[in-house]
Length: 116
Image (cartoon, rainbow, N blue to C red; front, side):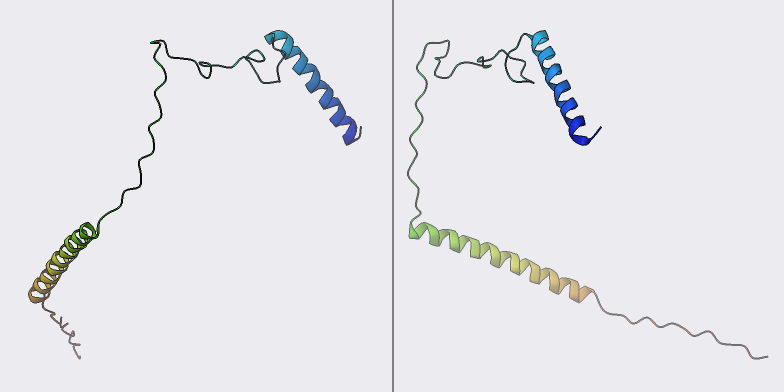
């Protein structure tokens, strides 16, 4: 058998299996669909809730907020103060570490060789 013949046979078997499935499930929809054709799960679109209230309106989009120049300057000054404090603490820690940490050179005694 050539490849085309095999493919035709497989397609026929698939068609037969889909028809058998449709008969067993009672569905005339597309293969793989377990729900009857035309039906969708869930509450229909546009339906009202059980309480009978109308759906809530979507809030209108608030306009974009802008910051005043004074506000920007206050934030900038506060951030610069934070940076200065951090830099000061790093420098203080660096000086403290360098003053307590002295470089010491280790000397290794050379073993003496005994002459016989």
